[in-house]
Image 1 (cartoon, one colour):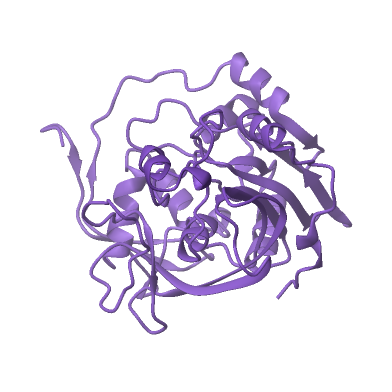
Image 2: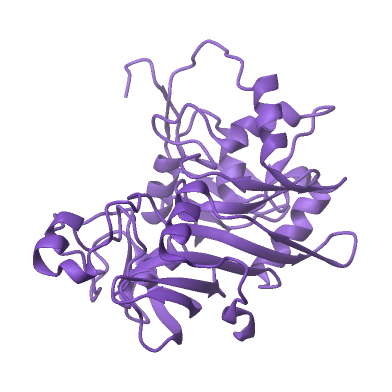
Length: 356
């Protein structure tokens, strides 16, 4: 941290009326714009941030009148003001738009574009949304996708829509379907993954998700833990094989009923069939697989990018009815589907999976 960094003391802040419904990370971003989100995640994991005296996560929603304990912070020094958005951002967002009305915007997030900022991040969707600001109000993200996950991303255009859509996600009214290309062919062809996950290290009786050849522990990686362990949170996913190219890979449709960090990537690895191209949860260097089991190796024509798509989102619309939006395969996945002869138009068996 620079010697000119701003240092703060402990304080207790009250959530204002116009801050009700904000996620904790968005609240901090408003109050302390120079605070890195990675540092916020760290102090939340350590229990230094409290809301009404209780431990919280960065995704916790705040209510008016709650008291937030803010620990000592080291904030980045002020930097010269820069223009954060441009007409090019607005044009790019228009190109990515799958659906739009007066209350919301649905984007087709491309591979490699971060949703929110982080260390060394110079361009991300949250910043680009500033180009759509009108009258002091700007669209806000309702949920997030990992940087290398493609597909449906929901944005609210006003606070009322943001609150109602956020509540739909929290109450599991939002139905999400993801497509993935996984290594090998899962058995059974349709199944249910129910595990407790936690982030970080030092959680007692944890069972690290397997990654042969890996070194050390990744504090940003979700791990399978036991019920009752510190920070353990239940996660539930239904999956179904849509098609396969045995024994190399399978096209998996996945329906998460909970929304934990990296949930689908961690679940795929936990059942022994990680998502192809996943640098964090992938199990094996491809060249090593070619030497040990050539029949299971992925062809070199398949790009080593994360093959995970937020394919479909169905959610109650704030004005009534149901919003149901589908995203196309990103270019690298479309080329893989073409290579294996998978037909994206065929019926998706995950639609038969339970909603609870």
